[in-house]
Length: 184
Ligand SMILES: CC(C)(COP(=O)(O)OP(=O)(O)OC[C@H]1O[C@@H](n2cnc3c(N)ncnc32)[C@H](O)[C@@H]1OP(=O)(O)O)[C@@H](O)C(=O)NCCC(=O)NCCS
Image (cartoon, rainbow, N blue to C red; front, side, top):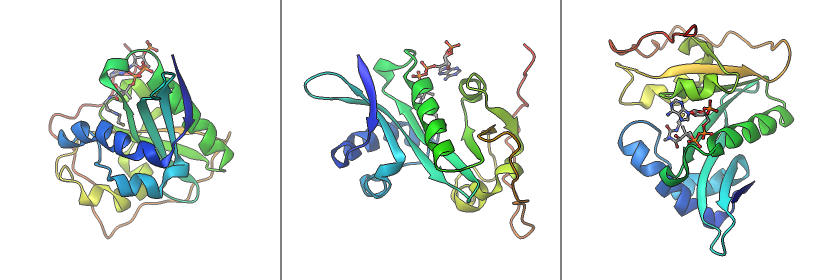
C-alpha cells in the first residue's frame, strides 16, 4: 500500500536517486537535491505505507509560462511500476495545475503512450516553446531529439500566446523519430 503526499525536505535525496539512473540514460533531466528542496511545494510523492515510509515515486509541477506548466521528473521505482502509481501521480499534478490556474499542462517524453492514456494529445514541440527556451537548448539531444511533445487542456478553451521565437531554432528531430500512430 502507498499514498500520495506532499514532498518533504527529507525526501529530496531519495527523489534525486530515483531520477539519476534515467538521467544517466538521457531519458530524464537530472535533478540535484538542492533543486528538489527549492521546488518542494511543486512535488507530489508516492510513499509506501511502511514504518520507514519509503518514497517509491514522485513528480514535479514546473512553470514554463503563466499559462503553461510541465509534468517534470515523473518517476516510479522499478519495483513498483505497472501498479497505477504513475497514473495517480500525473492525475494529482493535473489537479494541482488546474488549481494553480494554468491553462495547459505539457510533457516532453520518450513514453508518449503513457501520457496518451491520460488524455494528453500530441503537439509540435513549437507549441510548447517555453520548454525549448528553458531546457531543450541546453540538452545534448538538441540536434537529434527523439522525444514527443504532448499537452492536456486544463480549461475548456485555452487561450495561449504564440510562444514561437525566430531567434532560436527548434530542436532537430532524430532520424528515428516517427509520428505517433494514434489509430492502432
Ligand atoms: C513512466 C512511468 C512513470 C510509469 O509509471 P507506472 O507507475 O509504471 O505507470 P502506471 O502503472 O500508472 O501505468 C499507467 C498506464 O501507462 C502504461 N505505461 C506505463 N509505462 C509505460 C511505458 N513505458 N510505455 C507505454 N505505456 C506505459 C501502463 O501500461 C498503463 O496502461 P493501462 O492503464 O492501460 O494498463 C515509469 O515507467 C517510470 O518511472 N519510467 C522511468 C522514468 C520515465 O520515463 N519517466 C517519464 C519521464 S516524462
